[in-house]
Image (tube, rainbow, N blue to C red; front, side, top):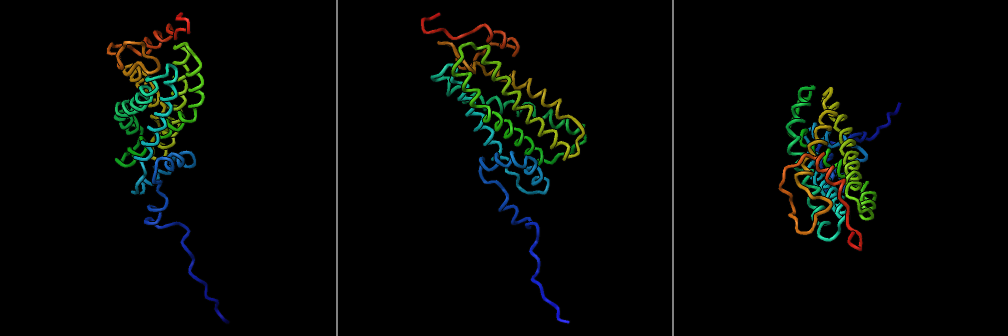
Length: 242
C-alpha cells in the first residue's frame, strides 16, 4: 500500500571524464606498475580515445634500462659505468625507431587497423615492459658483471637477460595484437627486433669494456656474431698484469 522510495543507484562505472582524471597514471612509477597488474589497460584507454600515459611508459622503460646499463658497466668500473648507462637506453631507442615501420607493416598484413594513439601506446608498452624485466634482472646482471673478468661470459649473460626482456615484451605484443584483431606477426617482429638490437649494440660498442686509449664509439664495421667472437677472446688482466 505504501511505496518505499529508494535513493537512485550510483553508477557502477565511472564516467569518461572521471575515469580520465582518476585512472590515468600520472608518473612513470605508476605507469610501470600498471603494466604488471593490467598490461592491456593503457591500450584499452587509447582505443576509447583517452590518454594512455604512453610518455610515462617510455620514460619508465628508459630509466629502468639506464639503471641496468649502470649495473652492466661495473664489469670495468670507473667511467665505463656512466658510458654503459647512457648507451643502454640508446640501444632501445634506436631499435625502436628502426623496427617501428616493420611492426606497422607486419601487423597490418595480419589484420590490425592501427590508429596513431594505439600504435604509440603499444610501442611504449613494449619499451616499458622490456625495461621492467631488465630492472628485475638487474641484481643478477650486477653480480656477474662485478665479479667476472671474462668478457665473453659476461656478454652471454647480458644477451640472455635482454632476450628474456624482449621475449616477455613480445608476449605482451601478441596479446595486444589479438585485441586489435591481428592474427599473427608478433613472434616474427620480436625475432627481428632482437637481431636489430644486437646489431645496434655492436654499432655502439664498446658497451662493457673499453680498452685504455680507445674511442668511446668504435667506428669499424662489424657483424654482431663477429663482435661476440672477439669478446670471447678477451678478459680483464689480473692484478699482476697477466
